[in-house]
Length: 256
Length: 293
Image (tube, rainbow over all chains, first blue to last red):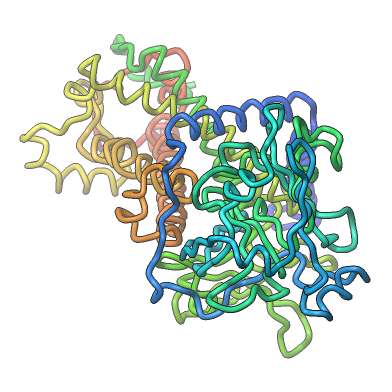
């Protein structure tokens, strides 16, 4: 028998240990992709959504902060400069030719220019942006209350979700999109914001218009919004999970 | 053979006293907990890896984190893992910041072998974390209620006045790895009681509440959470520290289970039966007896 310090023996032991843990970890990773686990994960997500909806009232507001709490620079994440031709042209012209379309299950489909949106009654709020990665950043947003816009176009009864179609393709993949249910869409702090910290929304943060849904995580708050569509179901969009990141495994309910 | 009997707590010829130490509920709770906490820890580290820095306050002051784990290129061009706590920097290459085989170093805060799932995969980490939390939290609430309603909290966990008087002695005996035997082992000693009370009533409630504080919907629902913990980023830091405390508890727990009669301890958490070790010749350590054979 070899001495305990024999390097071969030690290497064998180390390798066996590494191999065992690799097998275990690979098992866990396979499990993460299995149908059983994804059904359990979906059940957990449904439970979270229901529990939070039960506890949070319709009107419970996200905390609003004081001007002194505003972060010196608001961190930009995801796409920070869309490269597609159409968007570049709109940006070059200061978004004067940009139009927001609201259509789908509405009584009066409509388009709005940036000036038209800015002429509407606005709301300004200093809120905390929570990224799914874990960081937070405080900024001041001004925009149109989404509920006001929805009232203007007249939402039909069948509509259950508001979908936001965006100009950006993260890393050149599929178009970014997001969706909110009617409860979150009509929340008094849910805005389509065109102003950050008192100046026009910078391109890095979603110019000319981005969504603010203050009781949700950052990835719900679509940037570069081009079109708002009212739908009964989002199953036909993207991979059918209700958003760009949802299609890549993130929860549709991003309240946690 | 006698060694084995010592482990079982049945040496020295006396008829051992066998007690029913843990109820079925406690036993099931313990093992489900063990799995949940392992999943919560490993998936939590996966989530941490998505933004490996901690801050104090309402939001993230990106240039002055309280703790950060980063990868940096050293002078020799090799990747170094740098862990910074306040202004103190540590080279943690191989474990924190940079890990993996030497020829395929990876930039990641916590290494692949301790995160769930092991590759960088935040979405799945969150799914595991919340699923485990949905099992862990209701079970914990049920267990705390059970402790209170059954009277076990008062009978078994709340320290008695006379125990405080001998705290120095108990601590000294523990540090020498000499554990109560006979009738004394029938009940938890003061250190056990304090450890369990701290974990059950301080650390776990704290880790749950700080976890909830990270949820934007919960902050809108219960805004007091933000005030209690001094902001979402402080809550995230406290959440991490509580996890660290639970890892500490776990390590001490495992060591004590191993050195104070592992078979007896494990059996008491599986079947409930626990043998009170006879109180003979306390100065004879089990190893010494074994050598005498």
